[in-house]
Length: 254
Image (cartoon, rainbow, N blue to C red; front, side, top):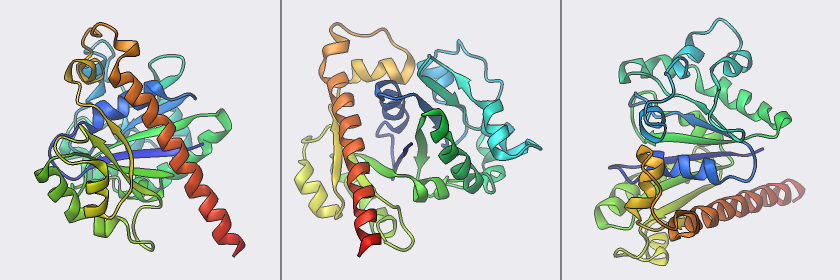
């Protein structure tokens, strides 16, 4: 099983939209966890257009008298046969209640391996109260989502030094670029930030709107560049995880 976390340094590069797209493109059953501490699910009123009631989520997990693993089962909601959701908190005021949830949640998510599920986490923006830092640190890959513009790169640069520290940072960090080449190329951004570009997605607002707000798919959606980009992103993430696990095995042997 893999835990894949997405987060951002600033602005709105499309973390939630990308997390939803990855979950629905993932080859194995996927659990999408809305860990954004800003409050208010982005998936229920967005991708699902308010058709699914907000009856349970992370705050119920935090307040449950049950163990985290048992409480997690109670708050998971199936969206399709292969994609399930744990909705985020209802309000940013609830973010502080999540402080003691993240570490036991990591263990509970790793236990999902028995059911053959992988986990895609929408970690929201870095540096907020209630940020899911233990999830970001423990994930098999944590991707900083950024656009290829100077303001976005500058914001990312303020975080990369901290998150790539071997002792205290993310286990397998990387960048996920949106609109690569507009104007900066992946190689330029990777060099400036000192972090590998794991994947990139095209800037395709009409196609992204399907996952952002449940819009009708544009013509040739299933074979268009955005879906192809998501599929390539999934493959790149899996390869990045495999390389990281191989490196850990080699390190243990040394």
